[in-house]
Length: 283
Image (cartoon, rainbow, N blue to C red; front, side, top):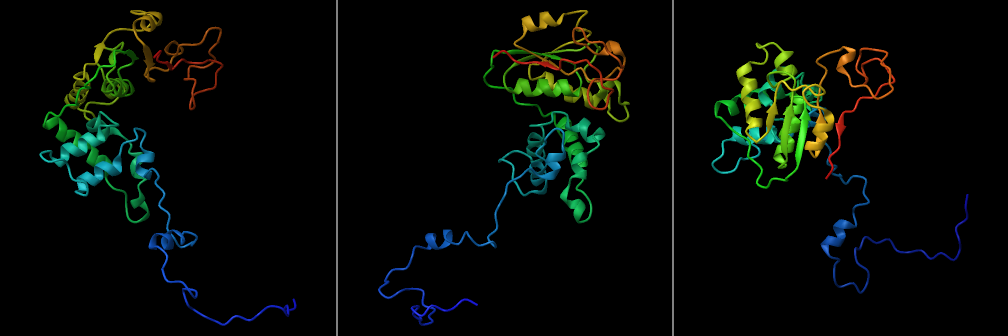
């Protein structure tokens, strides 16, 4: 046991807040900010909502659900359905189709699973898409063209989404597809009773109305070469999809020998091949 030093003077016990001579209290701001050392002070951390983090499109799900619930009010003169639809389509231009066929990973990540059951996000998306078609809503065109041109190879959901986002930025977009109609697997892989063709055509036409051009029945390498596309456009974006599983469907790098008919990415067999997915913009 340590000894008590003899030269330590005993101090009287006091609960006074101020010392002798103090006449002014501290500013209340100093009192507050001096208390941040407490472990009981809550800290607000802004992070991605689990529903939005689980969505491949990155939709602002919490945002448009707040509009649907009436928490966030629309601008004067705008119906809440339109306001929610415009918030949704900032990320996904095909809400009516996706509301029908999307497997809804957002609902698997929903916080309500820890309480009772997930929120019907897919049903809300479906409803907003149908409402927009019924009321003939359209996307606003960009005010200032960029003067840049982009070729999008493939007219499926990825190609249409890429064309939509590029057109919103003012770029001139041309979609090249070897089939007679746009839609990709949404048209040629999913039956019509799951994705009604009238609904699909309406959402595709809304994208084309932004000024997007489509060249159909145009096969890259046969009707037009990749070198021609690179010469005519500032950037080339590949969205060829996986409609076929034969070796002829993949563009193999020079000198590579394909050992499998599976695509060379996770989920397919490993090969020594590489596949060019995009040619970056030159601006």
